[in-house]
Image 1 (spheres, rainbow, N blue to C red):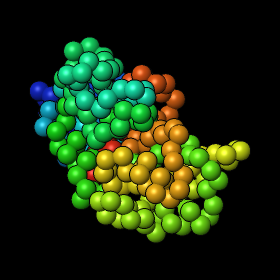
Image 2: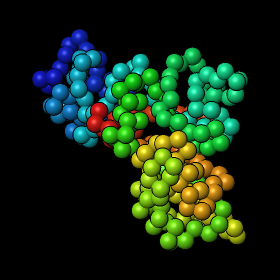
Image 3: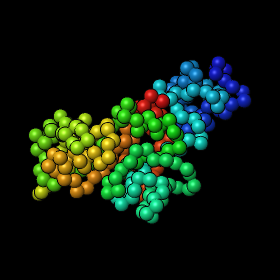
Image 4: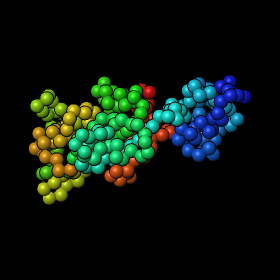
Length: 245
């Protein structure tokens, strides 16, 4: 029996399945393929039971085991404010949280902007995802007025002076053009208020529609406006690893 075996613990495949790694059968395959480490030891036996304090990695990515921890991806519709309560009675993020879960939002999107926002009860994860020192990338797709030229893309990436200091995109590219409009993708790691709208406006291309499509390692995917999905298993582990957890 493995040196990490704890007779009082849960079976490893059950722990992995509960953490969102797939069905128990799929988790058994992960174990027998030698892809699971418990407290630094590769485990390939299916009978192993593990302590609730065990540190488990799958493919070298640490797996979050706390069943009380919840992280959701929400496609925030336009017209919803990025708070959990609003004294003016406007629609809020809380209107889209399933059940009675007490979650708080990670970062903000202005009322007119739609797209990906994360909700969690993991305070340390939320802190790291929003603190400037972690430089978490966010991806936006903006429909703007006018034809965005290569020169404008260079300006966006080299930096433009705004009223509260210079700002720059990490990456910028044109996805499509049509008469009088361009669709531009920007990646930024800072989160100043309305930074994408202000940056594009200062470049001479006012934003007509703005969608956040990615936050750190999480993508909007096929989520429709107003829909949520739980982030768990390998996807959650990769998100946590991206900010050093």
